[in-house]
Length: 365
Image (cartoon, rainbow, N blue to C red; front, side, top):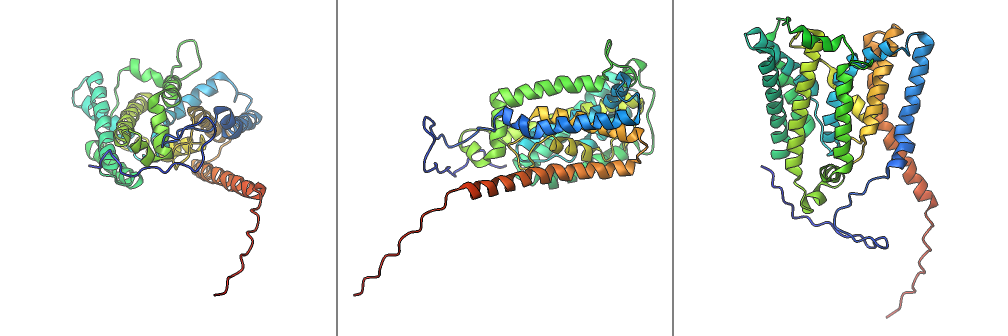
């Protein structure tokens, strides 16, 4: 088990700004308005461009019913993006999100098929999600293993368990009162249930991340993990809890996915982890941790879902859509890095040159 304490002591800067005392940990982030003028504003422009592209191709693209189907198709991806946002903010990764979606739906379907009522089966699926998240959390936070390697392994593990339990069967016959969530919008709106749940969860996660001590701790862990430990932040405990949270949320998304489709198969959600990661990183979250906003992820999810819907209505093949997803994922990694490089070059160019030091004559003996 990795110790929660650290013996490294941050070195104070040579000089501090007037009126600011160095505390050993800088949790200050870029002001929100500056972030909005950069990445989030670009996402708004891209979203408007996608709307124009879709509307030019179909006269019904801007209808409320079309946005209902966007929410139906992308709601679970958006929901899984929220816990992944928090994990990436700490500098870690979870690639097992879609496999947990498939495993939780499989567990619910398997138990329902074997005589369990739907509600206990759903509860058991959530417990499986918590256990899967705890496994990831223990390996990453407890043993200090690389999160990408761990979650690639658990991705395969979860999918293999689902295949053993259910393949090649497909479970159907869920209560109609629950399966209606995939075909009926929220009363009085054109909003799908999964999209409505996502918005409520996004509001909650946004408050936690941007307005609570826990959120500031998550940001601090991503920016300066060693300094965060020195400041008394329980880094390992927070990371472990985030992985458990991710497991529960992804299992909940798996339940929604199964009820929406009125069926369960072991390969449900296969490949969706790429979409979830793309939504998070395209939302402006730094893969190195410590940078990102919930607003950016919400805009990214809406833009991403609208883009895929427009491409589908234009007759673009699913394989080509995957290529576009990959391109967006690469751009979300390259563009922020290019911005940092350009900013560094600009600062270097504007920095005044140091005066040359006079050469002292050598005294002869």
